[in-house]
Amino acid sequence: MEKTPKLLAPAGSMAALKAAIDAGADEVYLGGSAFNARINASNFDNDALIKAGRLCKSANVGMHITLNTLIYDKEFKSVLEYVDFLANEVNPDALIIQDLGLVSAIRQKFPSLALHASTQMRIHSYLDAEYLKSLGFTRAVLARELPIEDIKRFAESGLETEIFVHGAICVSESGGCLMSSVIGNRSGNRGECAQPCRLPYKAQNKYPLSLKDMCLAPHISELCESGVKSLKIEGRMKAPDYVGAVVSVYRRLLDERRNATGEEIKYLASVFSRSGFTDGYFTSRIRGDMFGIRSESDKKKSESVSGNIKKAEPRSERERVAVPPFTPPERNSEKTLHPALQKGLVLRFEGNPPSAELLAKHGETAARIDIPLRHCADKRFLPYAEKISAIIPRSVFLKELETVKRQIAEAKAAGIKNATVSSFNHLTLCEGMYLHGDYAFNVFNRETLFMLENYSLSSVMLSPETDGRFARGSRCALEYIGYGRMPLMYTRTCIIANIDGCKKQKRCFSRLVDRTGAAFPVISGHSHTNTVYNSLPRYCLDKKSELKKSGVGLLTLLFTTENEKQINEIIGLALSGEKPKFEYTRR
Image 1 (cartoon, helix red, strand yellow):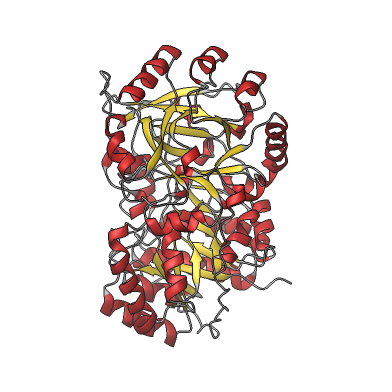
Image 2 (image 1 turned 45 degrees about the horizontal axis):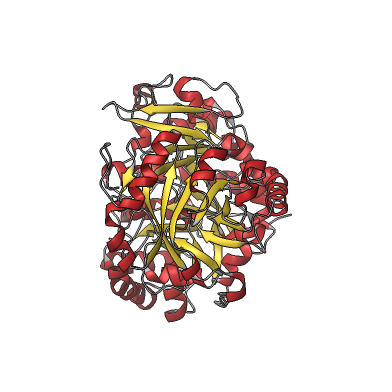
């Protein structure tokens, strides 16, 4: 029989921490006053962190501290001083990290600290596990959108596996949402998300982005046999009563290794729900009934749970996991293109693929042409195969893996030697190709850039949340989006079906209209995934001389909804550096 998974509870305040411990949590996760993805929770100042550490130690409860935001270069000194304080004064069992550069810095300065890879790192495949081990991670927090078969496969990797089982879930893949940042200047990757996904839109479903809370209480028996190490409850913004109530239910289910009854599910819903719960990602039933809001009826049904929690028995001695060595690879110059060979415009097509006429006009002058993998074997692209880079799907689940492998093989057979990648698992899938790091790697600082250089990337796109001027001196060619509608969300659910109904066509398109009348294009991708784009295109081609001084040699023109006439106009503006006459944004 598999060992019973640990129960990991949220603690947004000292009262919530005590409630989690009393209700039977094996582990807790909490954040300090900065550098965590729930910056608006009460959180813990330094004195409170020391007290929290002592309380957890006395209760034999594991303590994980969140440092799961992206870090600017200017913040590294402060964050490492903070880590020094944590290591010497708080003594947590682990730090939860998103930023690749921060991983490198901590590993070099604090080699004995256990690190957990945050769900913000977009961990979707068992192929990610070996890379995470080489970075010295002892545990991975998997993406919420993974189904059970993918979870089990990852758990076989030997890396401790943690999954979310209860609480709020994002419609966008974690770590990949730019919507709050771009339209509201509040970055989800910096713990400031304004939750635009919970707002109404002009659509068939008035709340087309709002998912119900996850509840995997009906699947505890299966999870106990899955090899998963820890089951995580979301809720650092929730009150102590919520934490105590939810933890107590899951504690009982785990102790008895059974699924929740109907009455227990009803009780959890009375504590908090959004029109009920969903297990759609876990069961691969990705459909319209996953969506819901916190209705007035939900609020009226909620009952006070204060005083209903039976204090749990003391937990057994907590485990300390051996920290793997930090062993990133060395850059292989024979597998990379020199930056001097990568200068100019990258023409990237995420809407309709380019026509033969458009390629004939601009194909020779482009530095690179990025096209979604599923289109790459089209005969019209054969004359430009040397310049084409296959955009690999952002997430590849087990059920899609063989199809993606076949498409990569077909692209290679067509003479395509470049791949635009956004996850570590892509490096394995695209072995033997020249690799170009995409914006989803979230390159916020030079440390992250240096880390990615070691993985023999030929070019790296700097995060569109930065100004692109921090990264000169790289061994990779540096890339930046100079024009295009920013990709705000990448979703595993069909937003188009919520807007105006899904026709199950090979190619779907719609627009998401908000309360101000702004229209956000939504384009379908592989496996019926959707990408939501900004209502206005970003334009900073008139700043290309400044970007060039910072080392940016590749400027990407991201085409989504433009017709051929507009594409020709934008390429002309890119060559001239003039400001456009159409409406645009700098973000």
